Image (cartoon, rainbow, N blue to C red; front, side):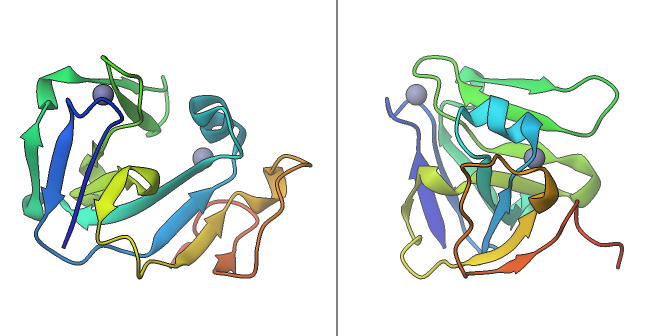
Length: 135
Ligand SMILES: [Zn+2]
Ligand SMILES: [Zn+2]
């Protein structure tokens, strides 16, 4: 059970299920999207995710020729949740959580080989040199 919102409060959501732990991506695309050392998300089942408000205020952008997609509040610019259709899941910015985030730990770091030189990874979570290993 988690809920969260953007900085201005226009976008609010809740999830009536457990999420994954935090997944950190250190790739250059996520660095540009965040302006920082990458993104941090939790993954929730799409059918347990509810928009409380602001779904129509989310602008999303899909990188051409890729499955990489991001969304943001078009009022305040905060990253917003977005669907991953292939996984039937919602990718939720971990930093947008207002409830339910206190017990979360980092589960996975991906694209570690392309991280910024100034990005120091702590000791939580498995590190993968590229994307998720094929399972
Ligand atoms: Zn906002
Ligand atoms: Zn990335």
